[in-house]
Length: 282
Image (tube, rainbow, N blue to C red):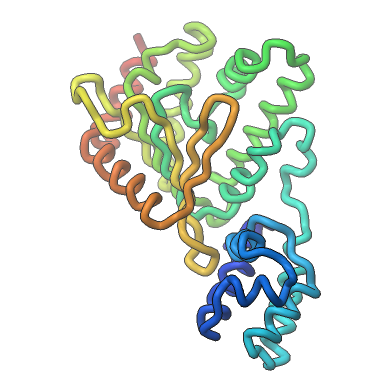
């Protein structure tokens, strides 16, 4: 479903790219009509910037789109892109570079994540999340920490809502050997992982130490599978103090191949869950 504003922008951008290519025109041609740059056209087609109705009308004229119904549908989509996402109410708790991720995650049909650090955010308990958030922001007040925890819990609601995405979470064994928050908090977190893995739309795997080297040593990344009518998938790589979004098909393909290797190297889902359950009882 393309309900999130981010998805609507990407859907409109993808349609503009399709119409431009069908008309045999280049980004330079489009930029000339908009009295702008090819860079802006690229950002529009990737859904990275707000749309102006006047710009869309000028592009539709350039692309030879005269059908009133088609034009009206795209103009209506421009209005839809101006809506705000559910996370807007948490704007004080959302880093600016993470807003894009929230929009992509909200519209993704599949989320595939490999982590060698903390447990995947969509699978965290409130207590575990609070420890992580406080550790990352020692000066944050109790209210600020609580807001960020609630934001994380709001994200998790989509996993149990209507038409939930499939979450495929692969964790390095090191993630399960680091008792963040102390014994009680971490035990509850492991038990929560086991319960989450029982849901039909959640797959959990563990990559054991015994496998040795693997293609993602020291890396954590998330592949956001987007609807076909929106655009290609996006890979999110969180860096220290920044975030990287990988969108070029050849680059995302490399991450998908890496994920496939990790799936094969990891314990099967049933064995992974048994391992997590055993660790929670130790």
